[in-house]
Length: 268
Length: 268
Picture (cartoon, chains in turn cyan, red):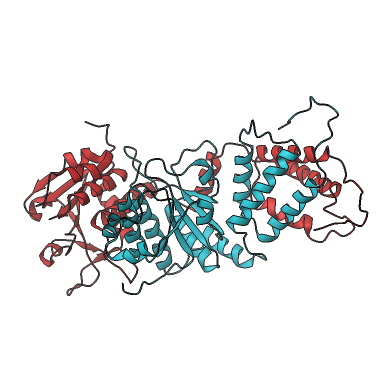
């Protein structure tokens, strides 16, 4: 159907969640291809496929045609070692943040180090939900003027893809956080864990917290959110996931607490 | 009609020439307002005013409503001391060029010096004509991938307005990684844990690993080293230390494993 695509970023997928307007899918695909990105993943899009998406894609119909449609965010980010989510600035529990420029640099450095990467964009109306944001290592906020902070979805895709290409074109990496990260990645003795294996760890951890009666699912408070944020700041490697799961399995073998004092409860 | 606009760039006008699709006018207006720009000048637009422009503008209808419509480029740039035109890279006669980032910096610096500034965008189909480009002090080229170099008009407006706002934000403090770190710390909701409370956590963790028989002090291997490295990759906050110690205490209450099978050992 189309000319060859230069796939500058074969390890980077752009993930759009529950997009309402197919025009935005097409416009996002065009923005991606303009900047050398081609891998589009759609989580449960409202109207897709749709003529409007193809029309707005202009010469990026190939990106729309090859988009992968999945039902859940977990499927969309399966196998990813770096997960970035776009977000408005104010969240109740602060999360590690990246500016768009630093995001571009990080994506380029981590792709060079062999990582699989996802950049996630939320719904036109409400962005990403908290549980989606909690799957991210970093949140990305695009600075705006005070009067109007809500960017169109495809525009946000454009800005971040632009920064990814800019970082890639930058003659040589600056000596900065980028350099430190790169060294860290290169020197590391283990591969970073994928998002799915980390998700399994979180499930195992949650079950174990319930088992030992430290966590009460009826009164969750912010316990799991805080633990997710903590482990996502760490960016676990494969060995660490194995160690933690081994520890949890050892705890699981102990069974539930003895009921000597029924009044003893959760001591968070 | 609408809330107050923060006009960060009162000396900067965005000029769109002979725009064919009114949707692009609306999308460009939204992109402008998102980035703190408000002055839109339309040279001989094809369909304007038009409902599509207002719809795509979303909450930037004020920018569309206050757009100035003129017949010629000369009227549009009257009074300007710096004129910048977007252009594809290859022109027969080379012209002084600016990258988008340098464009943003130049606009901010010249506005601060009192200049009146226009940034000109051409037709969706054919961009700017040679005689229009020759009225510019600099041409601006937005870098793209090889496969598809033609940005949507409103996307081009978005990228340049984004760079103008970025330059404006950067002009205030030096933006270094240090600064980002500092802001991140300032935004955090909990104080970082002290080294002694983290050390107590490690001791508690080690005791618990022995208790559940996941860790054998006679055969330590690298388990504790890996766990220390893992937690030290981030800076634990006080709440996180409390959560982890609370979990360990809950595990402690379970006691040691039942000795049904004496052969069952460490399964690191």
